[in-house]
Amino acid sequence: MEWKQFYRALTSNIRLYILLDMDTTILIKTKKDLKLQAQALASELGFSLTDIVNASLRQFVINQGITISKIPTETLDDYSNREEILLGLQDSFKEFKR
Image (cartoon, rainbow, N blue to C red; front, side, top):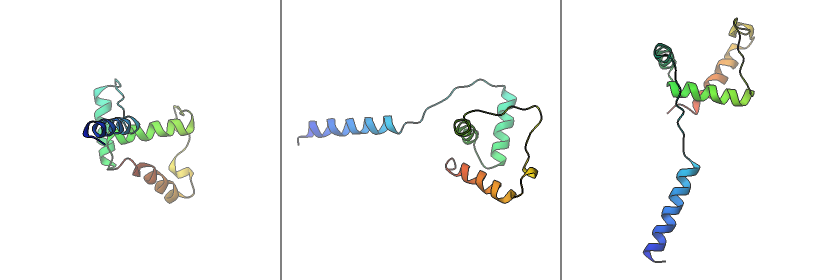
């Protein structure tokens, strides 16, 4: 195989790899103080705001919707096995940790 053919094949494969494995960006508008509070809380928990948004999007897709309530309908105290719930939550965030 001559050099030009090799280069074309390599370039084509690189482009395909990039397209198949590409991340994307979402641009949203929110209040600055809300963003800063969310970043601070995420940081306290050991995550980035990107990790939190991605986890929220994943849950939205898995649950096929979101629950909106003026009063929380469930708390951790409602569950008999708190450790299992907390371990599940930690596991769901593992893929976002770097």
